[in-house]
Image 1 (cartoon, helix red, strand yellow):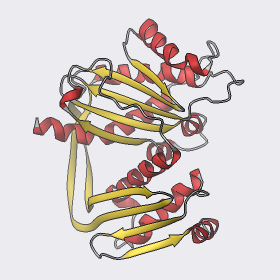
Image 2: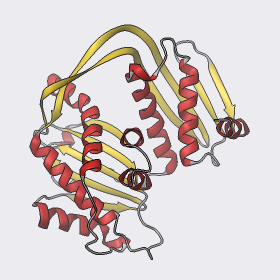
Image 3: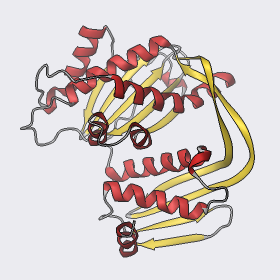
Image 4: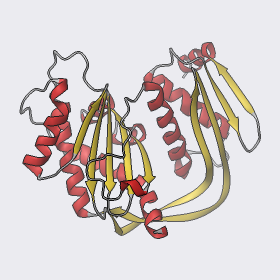
Length: 296
Protein backbone atom coordinates (compact mmCIF):
# COMPACT_ATOMS: atom_id res chain seq x y z
CA UNK A 1 0.00 0.00 0.00
CA UNK A 2 2.91 2.36 0.74
CA UNK A 3 4.26 1.86 -2.75
CA UNK A 4 0.81 2.40 -4.24
CA UNK A 5 0.45 5.65 -2.29
CA UNK A 6 3.78 6.86 -3.64
CA UNK A 7 2.67 6.02 -7.19
CA UNK A 8 -0.64 7.82 -6.81
CA UNK A 9 1.01 10.91 -5.36
CA UNK A 10 3.27 11.03 -8.39
CA UNK A 11 0.18 10.77 -10.58
CA UNK A 12 -0.48 14.48 -10.02
CA UNK A 13 2.08 15.21 -12.74
CA UNK A 14 0.87 12.38 -14.96
CA UNK A 15 -2.73 13.57 -14.63
CA UNK A 16 -1.85 17.08 -15.71
CA UNK A 17 0.26 15.90 -18.63
CA UNK A 18 -2.41 13.45 -19.76
CA UNK A 19 -5.08 16.13 -19.52
CA UNK A 20 -3.03 18.53 -21.63
CA UNK A 21 -2.32 15.83 -24.21
CA UNK A 22 -5.98 14.85 -24.46
CA UNK A 23 -7.01 18.49 -24.72
CA UNK A 24 -4.52 19.32 -27.46
CA UNK A 25 -5.22 16.17 -29.49
CA UNK A 26 -8.99 15.95 -29.31
CA UNK A 27 -9.59 17.84 -32.58
CA UNK A 28 -12.82 19.61 -33.38
CA UNK A 29 -15.73 19.28 -31.00
CA UNK A 30 -18.66 17.88 -32.99
CA UNK A 31 -21.81 20.02 -32.97
CA UNK A 32 -24.16 17.11 -32.48
CA UNK A 33 -26.88 19.07 -30.68
CA UNK A 34 -27.38 21.95 -28.30
CA UNK A 35 -28.12 21.33 -24.64
CA UNK A 36 -30.11 23.09 -21.97
CA UNK A 37 -28.29 23.46 -18.66
CA UNK A 38 -30.69 21.02 -17.01
CA UNK A 39 -29.86 18.39 -19.66
CA UNK A 40 -26.09 18.46 -19.15
CA UNK A 41 -25.62 15.66 -16.56
CA UNK A 42 -27.85 13.15 -18.34
CA UNK A 43 -26.40 14.03 -21.75
CA UNK A 44 -22.85 13.33 -20.51
CA UNK A 45 -23.93 10.02 -18.95
CA UNK A 46 -25.73 9.01 -22.16
CA UNK A 47 -22.73 9.79 -24.38
CA UNK A 48 -20.38 7.87 -22.09
CA UNK A 49 -22.71 4.88 -21.95
CA UNK A 50 -23.91 4.74 -25.56
CA UNK A 51 -20.75 5.82 -27.40
CA UNK A 52 -17.97 4.52 -25.14
CA UNK A 53 -19.69 1.86 -22.95
CA UNK A 54 -18.56 3.68 -19.80
CA UNK A 55 -20.67 4.08 -16.69
CA UNK A 56 -20.20 7.31 -14.76
CA UNK A 57 -22.05 9.73 -12.53
CA UNK A 58 -22.68 13.38 -13.46
CA UNK A 59 -24.16 15.91 -11.06
CA UNK A 60 -24.83 19.61 -11.56
CA UNK A 61 -24.60 21.49 -8.28
CA UNK A 62 -25.26 25.18 -8.82
CA UNK A 63 -22.67 26.24 -11.39
CA UNK A 64 -20.35 23.29 -10.77
CA UNK A 65 -20.49 20.14 -12.91
CA UNK A 66 -19.21 17.04 -11.11
CA UNK A 67 -18.11 13.97 -13.06
CA UNK A 68 -17.35 10.76 -11.15
CA UNK A 69 -15.51 8.07 -13.12
CA UNK A 70 -14.96 4.82 -11.17
CA UNK A 71 -12.11 2.64 -12.50
CA UNK A 72 -9.82 -0.10 -11.20
CA UNK A 73 -6.02 -0.36 -11.05
CA UNK A 74 -5.38 2.96 -12.77
CA UNK A 75 -1.73 3.14 -11.66
CA UNK A 76 1.05 1.22 -13.39
CA UNK A 77 4.82 1.37 -13.70
CA UNK A 78 5.77 3.97 -16.29
CA UNK A 79 7.54 2.58 -19.37
CA UNK A 80 9.94 5.51 -19.22
CA UNK A 81 10.15 7.03 -15.74
CA UNK A 82 10.51 10.81 -15.66
CA UNK A 83 13.07 12.49 -13.45
CA UNK A 84 13.10 15.98 -11.98
CA UNK A 85 15.57 17.67 -9.68
CA UNK A 86 14.40 18.69 -6.24
CA UNK A 87 16.01 21.98 -5.20
CA UNK A 88 13.32 23.34 -2.90
CA UNK A 89 11.39 21.47 -0.25
CA UNK A 90 7.84 22.63 0.40
CA UNK A 91 6.77 21.14 3.73
CA UNK A 92 3.65 23.29 3.86
CA UNK A 93 1.68 25.49 1.46
CA UNK A 94 -1.68 26.79 2.61
CA UNK A 95 -3.88 29.42 0.98
CA UNK A 96 -7.07 30.23 2.88
CA UNK A 97 -9.63 33.00 3.08
CA UNK A 98 -10.59 34.69 6.35
CA UNK A 99 -13.70 36.42 5.02
CA UNK A 100 -12.19 38.60 2.25
CA UNK A 101 -8.58 38.40 3.44
CA UNK A 102 -6.41 35.98 1.48
CA UNK A 103 -3.96 34.32 3.88
CA UNK A 104 -0.95 32.34 2.68
CA UNK A 105 1.22 30.34 5.09
CA UNK A 106 4.18 28.37 3.80
CA UNK A 107 7.29 26.51 4.81
CA UNK A 108 9.59 26.37 1.79
CA UNK A 109 13.36 26.19 1.83
CA UNK A 110 16.24 25.39 -0.45
CA UNK A 111 17.75 21.93 0.02
CA UNK A 112 20.67 19.98 -1.34
CA UNK A 113 19.70 19.13 -4.95
CA UNK A 114 18.68 15.56 -5.62
CA UNK A 115 16.97 13.75 -8.45
CA UNK A 116 13.43 12.48 -7.90
CA UNK A 117 12.12 9.71 -10.17
CA UNK A 118 8.45 9.51 -11.09
CA UNK A 119 7.86 5.87 -12.01
CA UNK A 120 4.06 5.99 -12.09
CA UNK A 121 1.64 6.50 -14.94
CA UNK A 122 -1.97 5.84 -15.85
CA UNK A 123 -2.70 2.42 -17.31
CA UNK A 124 -3.56 2.41 -21.01
CA UNK A 125 -7.13 1.39 -20.17
CA UNK A 126 -7.47 4.33 -17.79
CA UNK A 127 -6.00 6.75 -20.35
CA UNK A 128 -8.48 5.58 -22.99
CA UNK A 129 -11.48 5.86 -20.68
CA UNK A 130 -10.44 9.23 -19.26
CA UNK A 131 -9.88 10.56 -22.78
CA UNK A 132 -13.25 9.31 -23.98
CA UNK A 133 -15.07 10.74 -20.97
CA UNK A 134 -13.39 14.08 -21.50
CA UNK A 135 -14.40 14.06 -25.17
CA UNK A 136 -18.00 13.33 -24.26
CA UNK A 137 -17.97 16.01 -21.59
CA UNK A 138 -16.46 18.58 -23.94
CA UNK A 139 -19.03 17.66 -26.60
CA UNK A 140 -21.74 18.79 -24.20
CA UNK A 141 -19.97 21.78 -22.60
CA UNK A 142 -19.00 23.27 -25.96
CA UNK A 143 -22.54 22.93 -27.29
CA UNK A 144 -24.73 24.51 -24.63
CA UNK A 145 -27.69 26.45 -25.95
CA UNK A 146 -26.63 30.10 -26.12
CA UNK A 147 -29.98 31.21 -24.72
CA UNK A 148 -29.08 29.59 -21.39
CA UNK A 149 -28.36 32.23 -18.75
CA UNK A 150 -26.67 30.06 -16.11
CA UNK A 151 -24.34 27.50 -17.73
CA UNK A 152 -21.81 25.76 -15.44
CA UNK A 153 -18.61 27.66 -14.65
CA UNK A 154 -16.58 24.89 -12.99
CA UNK A 155 -15.87 21.29 -13.93
CA UNK A 156 -14.81 18.95 -11.13
CA UNK A 157 -13.73 15.57 -12.51
CA UNK A 158 -13.06 12.78 -10.02
CA UNK A 159 -11.21 9.71 -11.30
CA UNK A 160 -11.53 7.03 -8.62
CA UNK A 161 -9.62 3.78 -8.25
CA UNK A 162 -12.38 1.87 -6.48
CA UNK A 163 -10.18 -1.18 -6.00
CA UNK A 164 -7.27 0.56 -4.30
CA UNK A 165 -9.11 3.32 -2.44
CA UNK A 166 -7.88 6.61 -3.88
CA UNK A 167 -9.06 9.26 -6.32
CA UNK A 168 -7.68 12.15 -8.34
CA UNK A 169 -9.86 15.26 -8.37
CA UNK A 170 -9.27 17.93 -11.02
CA UNK A 171 -11.08 21.26 -10.75
CA UNK A 172 -11.21 23.41 -13.89
CA UNK A 173 -12.72 26.80 -14.67
CA UNK A 174 -14.68 26.07 -17.83
CA UNK A 175 -13.80 29.38 -19.56
CA UNK A 176 -10.12 28.38 -19.11
CA UNK A 177 -10.86 25.04 -20.77
CA UNK A 178 -12.32 26.84 -23.78
CA UNK A 179 -9.38 29.27 -23.92
CA UNK A 180 -6.96 26.32 -23.97
CA UNK A 181 -8.94 24.49 -26.65
CA UNK A 182 -8.87 27.55 -28.92
CA UNK A 183 -5.17 28.22 -28.12
CA UNK A 184 -5.86 31.49 -26.33
CA UNK A 185 -3.76 30.15 -23.47
CA UNK A 186 -1.02 27.54 -23.77
CA UNK A 187 -1.23 23.95 -22.62
CA UNK A 188 1.41 24.75 -19.99
CA UNK A 189 -0.67 27.61 -18.62
CA UNK A 190 -3.78 25.44 -18.64
CA UNK A 191 -1.95 22.81 -16.56
CA UNK A 192 -1.29 25.50 -13.96
CA UNK A 193 -4.94 26.57 -13.98
CA UNK A 194 -6.37 23.05 -13.53
CA UNK A 195 -6.19 22.21 -9.84
CA UNK A 196 -5.42 18.61 -8.82
CA UNK A 197 -5.84 16.84 -5.52
CA UNK A 198 -5.23 13.20 -4.55
CA UNK A 199 -7.42 11.71 -1.83
CA UNK A 200 -7.19 8.37 -0.03
CA UNK A 201 -10.06 6.75 1.85
CA UNK A 202 -11.67 3.40 2.56
CA UNK A 203 -15.00 4.90 1.51
CA UNK A 204 -13.74 5.06 -2.10
CA UNK A 205 -13.39 1.27 -2.31
CA UNK A 206 -16.20 -0.31 -4.38
CA UNK A 207 -18.05 3.03 -4.64
CA UNK A 208 -19.31 2.87 -8.22
CA UNK A 209 -21.80 5.72 -7.89
CA UNK A 210 -19.80 8.32 -5.95
CA UNK A 211 -21.97 8.23 -2.83
CA UNK A 212 -19.00 9.31 -0.69
CA UNK A 213 -18.55 12.57 -2.60
CA UNK A 214 -19.53 15.90 -1.12
CA UNK A 215 -20.56 17.63 -4.32
CA UNK A 216 -20.57 21.35 -3.53
CA UNK A 217 -20.98 24.39 -5.72
CA UNK A 218 -17.42 25.70 -6.04
CA UNK A 219 -16.99 29.43 -5.54
CA UNK A 220 -14.45 31.64 -7.26
CA UNK A 221 -12.72 32.23 -3.91
CA UNK A 222 -12.33 28.48 -3.42
CA UNK A 223 -10.95 28.10 -6.93
CA UNK A 224 -8.50 30.98 -6.40
CA UNK A 225 -7.33 29.32 -3.18
CA UNK A 226 -6.82 25.98 -4.92
CA UNK A 227 -4.98 27.53 -7.84
CA UNK A 228 -2.58 29.54 -5.71
CA UNK A 229 -1.71 26.38 -3.78
CA UNK A 230 -1.05 24.54 -7.03
CA UNK A 231 0.93 27.31 -8.72
CA UNK A 232 3.21 27.71 -5.71
CA UNK A 233 3.79 23.96 -5.57
CA UNK A 234 4.56 23.76 -9.29
CA UNK A 235 6.80 26.82 -9.17
CA UNK A 236 9.07 25.29 -6.53
CA UNK A 237 9.09 21.87 -8.20
CA UNK A 238 10.55 23.24 -11.44
CA UNK A 239 14.14 24.26 -10.94
CA UNK A 240 14.39 26.08 -14.28
CA UNK A 241 11.70 28.64 -13.43
CA UNK A 242 13.57 30.21 -10.51
CA UNK A 243 16.92 31.86 -9.93
CA UNK A 244 19.56 30.21 -7.78
CA UNK A 245 18.55 32.19 -4.70
CA UNK A 246 15.01 33.44 -5.17
CA UNK A 247 13.18 35.69 -2.75
CA UNK A 248 10.60 33.10 -1.69
CA UNK A 249 8.24 35.67 -0.15
CA UNK A 250 8.29 37.74 -3.34
CA UNK A 251 7.74 34.69 -5.54
CA UNK A 252 4.67 33.70 -3.53
CA UNK A 253 3.25 37.23 -3.49
CA UNK A 254 3.79 37.49 -7.25
CA UNK A 255 1.98 34.17 -7.71
CA UNK A 256 -1.01 35.36 -5.69
CA UNK A 257 -1.14 38.65 -7.59
CA UNK A 258 -0.97 36.85 -10.93
CA UNK A 259 -3.95 34.65 -10.01
CA UNK A 260 -5.94 37.65 -8.80
CA UNK A 261 -5.08 39.49 -12.02
CA UNK A 262 -6.63 36.63 -14.01
CA UNK A 263 -9.80 36.11 -11.99
CA UNK A 264 -10.38 39.50 -10.36
CA UNK A 265 -9.54 41.04 -7.00
CA UNK A 266 -12.52 43.32 -6.43
CA UNK A 267 -13.76 41.29 -3.45
CA UNK A 268 -10.34 40.77 -1.85
CA UNK A 269 -9.55 43.02 1.13
CA UNK A 270 -5.88 42.10 1.29
CA UNK A 271 -3.16 39.46 1.03
CA UNK A 272 -1.35 38.27 4.14
CA UNK A 273 1.82 36.19 3.83
CA UNK A 274 3.29 34.19 6.70
CA UNK A 275 6.69 32.60 6.20
CA UNK A 276 6.69 29.74 8.73
CA UNK A 277 10.49 29.44 8.61
CA UNK A 278 11.37 33.09 9.28
CA UNK A 279 8.09 33.86 11.17
CA UNK A 280 7.83 37.06 9.13
CA UNK A 281 4.44 38.37 7.99
CA UNK A 282 3.65 40.65 5.05
CA UNK A 283 0.32 42.41 4.47
CA UNK A 284 -0.78 43.92 1.18
CA UNK A 285 -4.02 45.89 1.43
CA UNK A 286 -6.72 46.08 -1.25
CA UNK A 287 -5.56 49.42 -2.72
CA UNK A 288 -1.98 48.14 -2.86
CA UNK A 289 -3.16 44.97 -4.65
CA UNK A 290 -4.61 47.05 -7.48
CA UNK A 291 -1.44 49.17 -7.70
CA UNK A 292 0.82 46.10 -7.83
CA UNK A 293 -1.32 44.42 -10.48
CA UNK A 294 -1.49 47.56 -12.61
CA UNK A 295 2.31 47.88 -12.40
CA UNK A 296 2.88 44.35 -13.71
